Length: 109
Length: 116
Image (tube, rainbow over all chains, first blue to last red; front, side, top):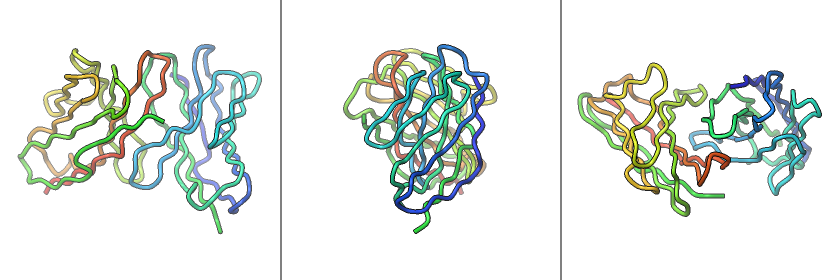
């Protein structure tokens, strides 16, 4: 499975956009990029996923570079409840998720 | 999104006893379920993959006789920690995949196990 690299921590002011980067330079053509987040002592929550096109849903937007070697998760208007660990995962079709260390996002009032 | 539940949410047991954790997909049929464990301030570690009606596939280093997994129906998988020891204390999380291999995984809320 392709390995992902994320910054260990980030801060974001409440109400501003949070942009969380992820590098996946060894990604293969059939591997999807998934984003989950984990709020303290809870199970991971699905956010969004994509293959090569940018994606948007009610929670976030996912921007994938044209070469697919990196992506950015955008939370357009961060709130205090968005404070969590965010995991970027690259997964071939049908295979399991292997979690990296993620980015600990702190939203500051 | 799809809902996955776990029971119990937390359990305390004595060393040497066995503990069963249930994982249920509430509003979809899960052909595949996964079990993870997570130590404090660490990431999730995949323990095993469970397909309905067949034996679970364990990750390297995970003892299958220690962590018994049963996936008897399309909505229920169980993890039994046998002869629990204090080092088995951890946060156990299940996830379920709806439908085919292209589907997203949804995670349960986790079960915190403390072995005294």
